[in-house]
Image 1 (cartoon, rainbow, N blue to C red):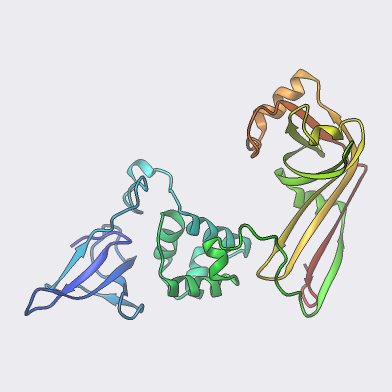
Image 2 (cartoon, rainbow, N blue to C red; image 1 turned 120 degrees about the vertical axis):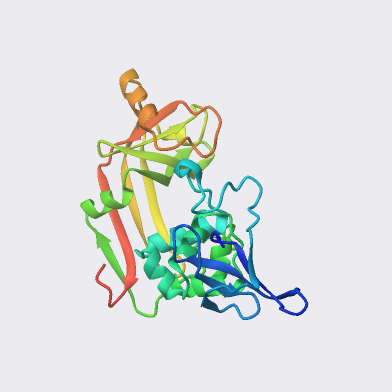
Length: 295
């Protein structure tokens, strides 16, 4: 008998041959897929170690269309193809600095099963999502993406918050190398704030746009540029504000270097070949944490 993560172990009735019990295989103890297995039973949702007998057989997992082969069966080490829930679980786990082993222990599941959830288009049960949400200090709705179209910060404020000013080095570290930020500019219709994909190059902020766009109105003026992060589950976060003059990048070598080393295409799509750079004259930031937490 051999199995892969996500397969079902089915135990037949010895008298009728009908299914007596079945469960999802969530943990392997041997790389070749031979028993024993960690099985999450469908009738109790409990995980137990199972040494299958002669009345048991494996029902292969049927992957979603275009999902590719399951974990442990990727030819040539092909890249994983996670589903939306898996990506959110992995993001939340990394955001909290947890290894897969630690997150799996908190959620009372096998590390191999957590890896399966993060790497494949899986459909975990509600009880699995509840345990994962508790382990990651978030909510089932957040893991399902239920709050994607809502503005952040709708949770409760901390009972004892601490607002701390950030130094320039901390601000630059939070800006990192790239991301999504907002640029505030003056237009003939009044002030405007628009999101842009940005790069950090030689301590300057650079972004691509179209010549007739709102972000292009920043050229030749002093602008404000902000990046922030809100941890909804923990009611904390940070923001960094950069102020400085914006100019259009015209040197061919610089434009070529920016284009070749950009981490992503502009999310807005379309032709956006105009590079604008903001050279900071002032950089400030703030972070909200619990009062008893140092960082």
